[in-house]
Amino acid sequence: MQEEIQRLADWIVESRRIVVFTGAGVSTESGIPDFRGPEGIWNQYDPADFTIGRFMGSAETRKKHWEFYRSGMLVDTSILPNRAHYAIADLYKLGKLVCIITQNIDDLHQRAGVPAERVIELHGNMKWVKCLSCGHRLPMESVIDRVKAEDLDEPLCNKCRGILKPEGIFFGEALPEEALHQAIHYSHNCDLFLVVGSTLLVTPAAHMPAYALEGGATLVVLNIGPTPMDSRAAMVVNAKAGEFMQQVMEEVKQRGN
Image 1 (cartoon, rainbow, N blue to C red):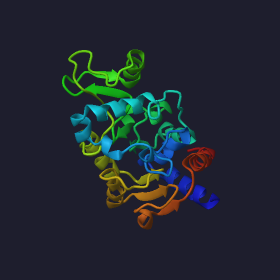
Image 2: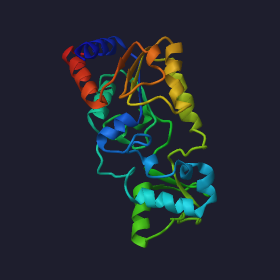
Image 3: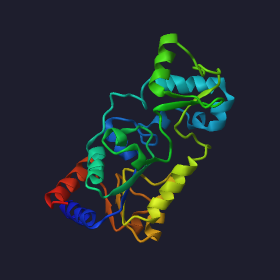
Image 4: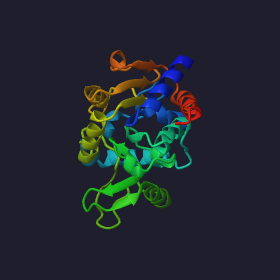
């Protein structure tokens, strides 16, 4: 794998406008379970309960959601960024990272040192909860604390008693319009597009590598397992994100770039 490390380091040194696209394969190395793997969340919970229609229409479904959130599987603040997050943050520190486009909802890129304005969260973020009636926003951690303290099946807005929903995007819910427009724009206008830890199966997020190729970027895919874009990538690496990216960035730093 040393050849791939050297080659990607070369491309990073030569690039000026890098976009990194991240998926669950980055978060899992911090201990966050993925959704679709053999031990993923969808083997423990019914994906249909995570549709926006069922969430809005069923109090029983919302109860299941809050049981899930209070378990801490997605919102455990003790979970820390890993080597992949810090290696990607190094690209920002070197002045080469235009943005991160992420499918993840865990805030770990920001905690690794990338400014929030450089992280485009296509699928939202689980650190905030929003009232669907009045728009009041609350930190997820404070809502979970109230759920536990008051042993609630479902917390309601403390301003208007409306339904509270995490700001993560549910099935059937439109992606944030501004985030999607930004992601398409930056994908079209980068010179190196690096996919890290995504199977590229969930659309429209998975269209971003194609936009990058249309704009003339070099496409690199780093993922455990194949993706639909492998045949169009300049390089495909089947490896864990943290170890590989750490070695790549060590090589970049040794070159003084």
